[in-house]
Length: 468
Image: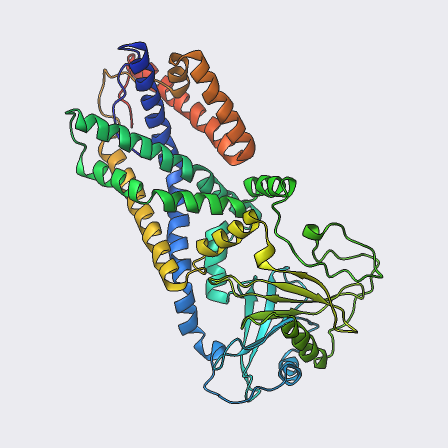
């Protein structure tokens, strides 16, 4: 958000006049986007900052469940699973097992209970050396987030309001890149004006612009990766990736004598309604499946074993170490012969799929560990400071003057040469189609701006001071 008075933009030579109108239009949109989307960006930045710090907080809060002082030979997975099953009394299905990834850590035996969401599970934490139960907690997602991180994650993503709440984060991500690039253009234009002998901006505006310039790459990264998770824009991105063959490969767990499910990159756990559901597999089977996966090269410390949920499915074993270098290979294993029937290697992923994987993991603070977390905290803190400075500038220079011309964005657009105005309209329409919440909110901004200016002009009987 910037503060300025918009003067007549039609003076001067045609080229300088068009440039002046463009600057005025950009300032007007930058102001309104920042003013109205700022609260959503503030919430996203603050909750994202907290999320970046959760690995260390979670490790301290749930230290007893995650770690053990026991050292020595580990028990077979079958014995650890038997121990976990003694804790579960409900009608739960054994959904996955994550063996202890390193000495001093615990094994997670995960169960899916009736009424749980597809990404939810109940984890029993077992000491792999003594077989003692260390804890019983709900976990969420591929990251295996514990309750604290799960709450912050869902708040950051949807304000704990489900799918409707996800609109807030999509709105913020849709406009963040526009604010960043528009702010950079205004900052650069102001620097050129200062170099030509113009007046230097106030301290707050200078800090606001300088922070934006320094944080530019981080803000664009947040916007791009945030959109991939979003509901509407993310769906459009997924369709585009699929059409261009940029989808993320996944193993097929479909057994050979069952109905096929399609091409390799579309594989997934798609239930066959006619397939007979199976009970939780015998715990003894897990050791053999793990050995089979290790035998074909899945040697990451962090792995997850997922048993088949129906008779027409195979086992899935996947690496879940998303730190650099990324290790997310997967294999599908035939239940009876323990032969590998399908496999994906991260090194064979299309470049777009690799970039998506790295982008998501960096956004979550996982990819490069502590340096990654500190960088996220720095960018989020800078964004928070920029938003606060923007609102403070607006409050100090809110409408108090009379006699200055304020022109609505649509009126400014009509002052531009027709080819340039048409180009802007076409780009806005395309962006509104690709990013639906951007399109809807842009129309709302323009309508609100026109109504406010019309109302003020009727009250004062003259042109009014620009609130920006």
